[in-house]
Length: 152
Image (cartoon, rainbow, N blue to C red; front, top):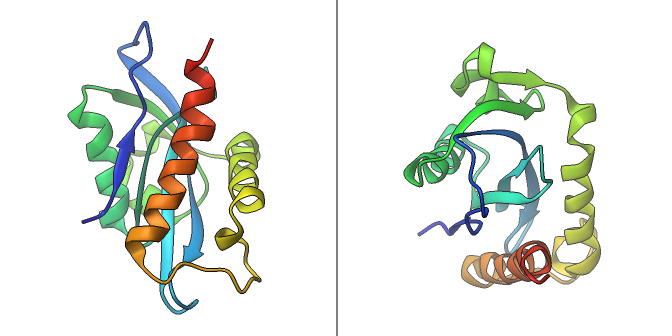
């Protein structure tokens, strides 16, 4: 089972979204067992919309896309880097390849790496089980990125 999460629906949902999409590397047990966090952020609000964990493959990206479409959200424009899953799976007219526009999402990566020691690249703290790895990261994302946006 691969965890996935969709953010709470916005108060006034729009029919289509423009999103930033990126992935973040970590590992479980040893560096030979990579674990990727794929997520999308709404361009207009800066809020994380959805995320999934898995390998860095087309299948994981398709799970992320399916998560969005299952809830009726339509992505009109994907702003991504040059990773081949985006190039292969997204039509050219729906994708903009621009690493500089992903800085806000990359900043969220840094927040995760700073706050969760198991995500730093050179550490003796790491997850031994996928269940705990995904669970701790999911709890942090939910608390830090979703709770802070909903408490007004």
